[in-house]
Amino acid sequence: MKKTLSTLTLTAGILAIAALPATAMASEVSLSGEGTVQYTPDSAHLQFTASAEHQLPEKASQQVAKTMKQWREAIEPYREELKDYSDANLTLHTRRLPVRNNSDKQETLAVASQTVSFTITDLELLNPLIKQAQKIGLQYNLGPHQFFHSKESELERQALSRAIQDVRKRCQFVASQLDKTCGEVVTLSVNGGYRPVSMMRAEASSASDVISNVGLREINTTVNATFELE
Image (tube, rainbow, N blue to C red; front, side, top):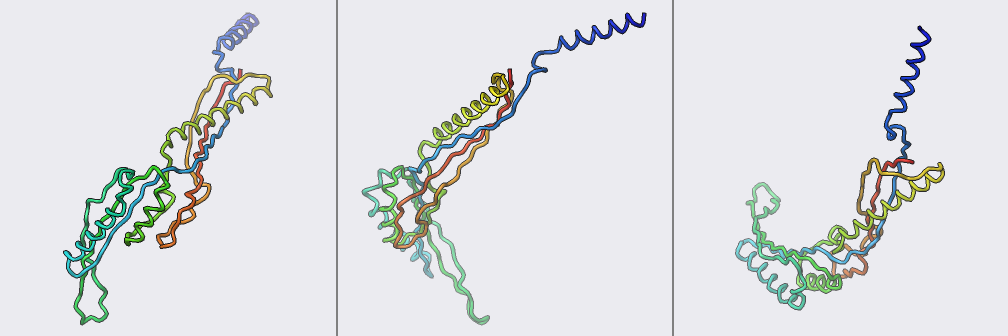
């Protein structure tokens, strides 16, 4: 009787294992793939500021208005190519001058400023605009973060596509070494980012500024995927 029960128990165990889903017995492999796209920015966000100081607020404002008039006249040949142009807001505040002696009276100056901002999609305009800003006396700063590509979304998709192709090829290689085939994707995650390959050759706002190269950049995307091996 005991022998019969043992045989029945063993048979039931074998049947239970055979009934397990095939996916539970499938092999899996986790891999990563990379996709990189290099590009040169073709557009820029620019910002210039006119400022003036005077004891009288109206005088400071008049000086800024005069500077802005000169700027608008100077950029007239390029005006239609400046996208999202804005120069309407004048700000005014006071600045305290340092006191040398405790007995001296605290003096203040009125500070007026007006900022110009716009986007250019043709970097050939960059140096002529900088030249006019320098000539008039506008303040500005140039940095890599101000430059971008007009089709960055398309470039991001290209980098992602290359990363997916890379991880798929790696899966196919691993599977071939194990006499298997690369099957369905079980999990997938994507990480991406930007990095400059070389910096701009000029960033200061001196009279000798000439931007000759805004620098090559990369979009790098990494894909982590788990595949079934069949």
